[in-house]
Image (cartoon, rainbow, N blue to C red; front, side):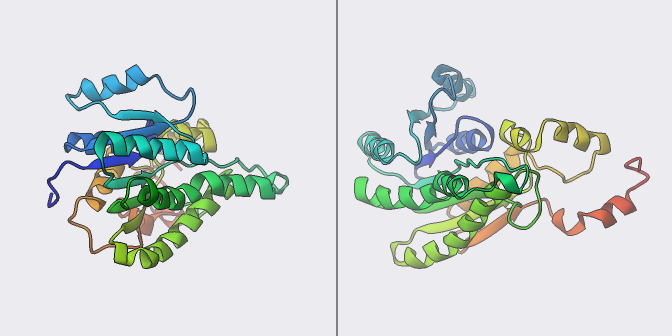
Length: 266
């Protein structure tokens, strides 16, 4: 990669699933990794062993609620004290109430979803300049197909993803002279505990029954694209929503199922 200096990478909500895989990928390339988590969400020793058992340096682990300003300041202060800088910010935390029907819609639920899933990408970046003294070079948010297609119980989560994909364009404009590179990575579904808690565990069984290729992508694929976007080789791409889908989106839908109906046992 073109940027060979050891960098400091912050991954919010990086203790499992996509966030953890991204953190491991940066550590594999020699970067120092900082991972945040919520109360009671991990056993520190177990997570550290996942890194050290692979010969990777242990990450800095920090409990920090992304909507708590005191936690944010404390986190960034510790990063400055330990490393003196922060090069990359991966905004990975996402939380939204599940929606079964219109009766589950409420203003409070929507605003709470935005507070957790959209606002941190903006507020963390601003506070980095205030606390550490400089903005990170890369800010990357994680998204999904929620803004453009229906997913079960996903109304509020999809709304926050759409906001992130819009804000990243405006943030690129506002931070252009600061040389901060904002992008969003939108992926196809990845089988994680978070996804199954949203769609239901029966989703994985259903997909395996029909064995539809391209329905999901792997954690490793998401991590590789994330690393590439922050590698220095992709700096001409700014303010964009990059889609990691194996090219499958073009051929998805009823027509694809119709074409493959015999193979799928339909």
